[in-house]
Structure formats: C-alpha cells, structure tokens
Image (tube, rainbow, N blue to C red; front, side):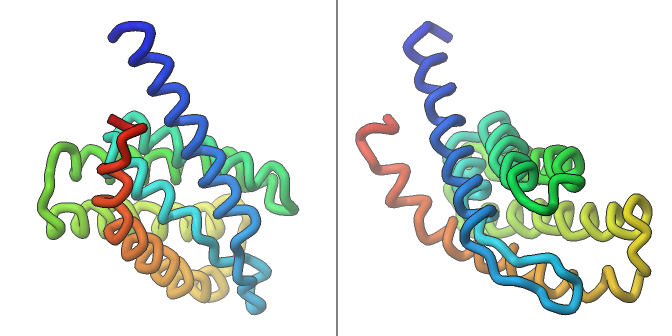
Length: 167
C-alpha cells in the first residue's frame, strides 16, 4: 500500500468515525424504561463495513461509538462499545467483502447486529448487574436500531460507492 492509499484509508476511517460519533451521540431516541437510548450509528458502521471492508468497518465501529460513549453519561460503556461495535463492523465487512448481492449484505448485517444485541445484553447483565428481565427491555430497541441502520446502509451503499471521491 503506497502513501496515497494509506492517507486515503486513514481519511476514510476518520470521516466515517466522525459520522458514526455524530449519529450515535446526537441522533438518539431515549428508552425511558432503562435509561438507555436507540441511535443511528449502526447505519454508518454498516455502510463503512460494506463499502470499505472489515478493517475500516471494525475501526469505524470501535472508534466513533466509543467516543460517543466517552462524551456522554454512558462513559462506563466505552470499552465494551469499542469491542462490541468494532467486532460488529469487522464481521459485517468480512461477510460482505467483495459481495455485490443484497442478500449477502443483509445476512452480514443480521449477523453483525446479533453480535451487538447479544454483546450489550451480556455486558449489562454480567458487568453492570442489570437484572436480566430489565436488560431484555433493550433488546427490541437494539433490533430496531440494527434494522433501521441496515435499511439505511443498504439504500446508501450503491450511491456512496459511486462517489468519485472514494474511487
């Protein structure tokens, strides 16, 4: 990889991480029952992972949402977010890598989303000692977050891929 390609990759990770930060930190719907929130960062993570592959998807997933946690009342979740969302982005990128079929991309998003949903459930129950029944309240919201994020990412993938600045 030459210096121009390295610079381009770093720039793409930085831009998409910033977008994931904004979509996670500022585009939120509160979940009143648990004090958590539904956010739109998934769309950015999935988009980056599908277009640029597992490394970019993993870095965007780890960096943007973890920084959003650090800058919020949810800072204690930041290390877990870094791992969970990073793994989510990496897995989506790995499964969808070089695949143009929508069904593969949807499958990738479903698997990545399941990692996110199960990951946060396990962290809430085992680390933060949230009662399992209460932690289950967030699961449908995380399913919505995954579904909306996936839908937006699938819709935008072709348009973003065709931007001449990214070629």
